Length: 155
Image (tube, rainbow, N blue to C red):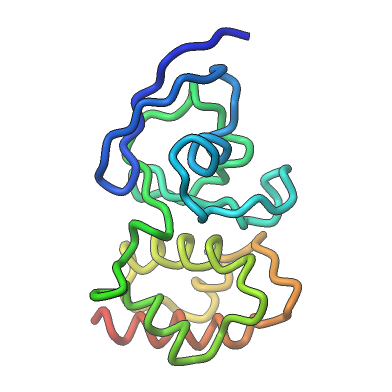
């Protein structure tokens, strides 16, 4: 286990993190950089609560070692601001999607990557993109409405 310094660009800001090269990106984001999203969910890259975008592609940060990170990282905190939220953040509020809120990170970060590439996704394309994400509160229909609402806002 080799400790080294990593330079991470997170939400447009550069950060230096000294850690074991096999440490998951999630731990650096939460413990070293101090972000509150992404969340720790299953720790097995199965639930999606830890999802971030790496150069616009959704990745599960709980299983991504720092040694494999090469690119710009965007977290939910970097997607929008309170003054200018991302359309998905606005749509989630409008459609009253959140319940416990633990899983929101994965759903929004994954849907944002989809909408960046496809402003008019079909229901099947949305479901396909969101496959594998887990929500124990069963807000799946609200999530679908929010993605469609955000897509309409982005067109």
